Image (cartoon, rainbow, N blue to C red; front, side):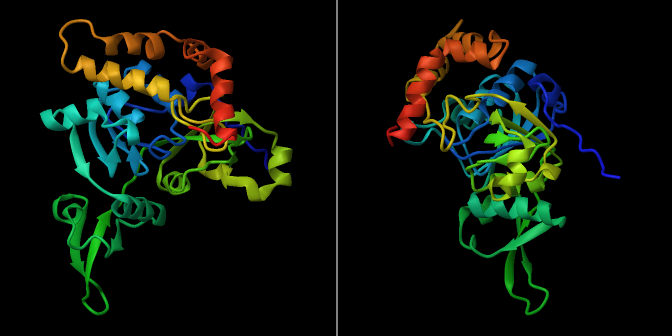
Length: 306
């Protein structure tokens, strides 16, 4: 008798009920690409505290927003910023003040940490970081002697996220994810205990079976799928739309001003308008320019603009 598969499609509130205060949360995507921004805003709205964040390995808007509302205890990342738009202001201030513990990492150490978790072992050996400050100062890295010839090696401690948040182009109701884009998201999914994926659109399982080569993350790795069109905004979704530069500049201006101003800040107004007040992804999209703005961002990707 054929075993019936369990649909994994959930509303965002149900999916995020799997998170708890103090968890280690991996946020997928890279820099301005494929960030699960809708899920991040909902976490902010949920009011979780003491989160420990890890990325894949370049973070930006996602980290900065959660740090800005006081939800974060520690971060592991190779870089946190907005690329050509500048530094991540809330992250920078938190590091300077020591209100958030920042664990120094880079691509090699973070990939090694995820690989160890995916392999089910306590650490992963690397050699590329000898002589670097990452190897010198990161508590995630220890030198050891190789078991065969006694050669010098570095052990990167396993990074085992309680929950991973990813964004992709498509998925079916069973959690087969397509068009992921990011090079590290599959590894993060393998390393994590629970995986929540927001997607631009749902496709049928029949289409997934017809085109198996398009599946980026298989269903057995995925816990929940959340339908969220334009759910990476204000970041970009690879193959779909570019990042919203105007919105990101507005965010940065407000965040920077709030760090030096007393009383109600422009940043608080940002949070109220774009995070706390919208009840659905569709209400949020209306506030950032609606369908017209989303089509502009999609056309910019198609025409190779940014």
